[in-house]
Image (tube, rainbow, N blue to C red; front, top):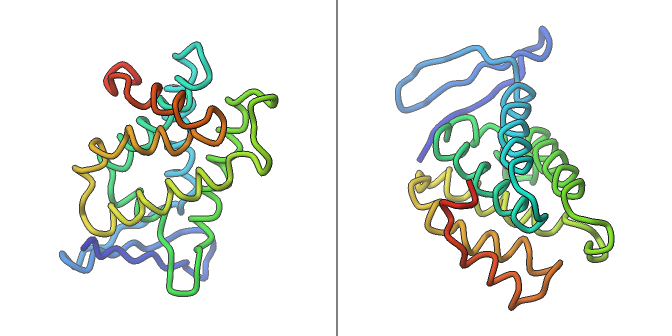
Length: 170
């Protein structure tokens, strides 16, 4: 398992991140930098698509690419402790919910918006990162796209979007 631990320093918003496998530390400006980088990657992927379901799919693929390329950063953003969500996790999910809500037309939004879909995907990705299965994220990407779109489009249309070539979503 990835064994990173973030501790908030009393001096302010700086974090010391430790990899328990190697015993190395690095100073980090907190989750805000990683969150901004993830958000920018997702927003850029969405902006290159025309139809909103395609934007949602592209955003999911971009988020999975981020987690695959930077599992330590993804773990910091999606870390959950035994008591529930960490502040970084909550901020990450909240920002991604706002981003998705900005992509999906209001008329298509189900009651409750995208909260359940984003939280579910975040937990699945978090579990994969913690278990060092990031290489498998690409394999589950179509299922995550279908999961995200189903409340908006229903099963058949969501599956249709999910079954499209994943490479064309990027």
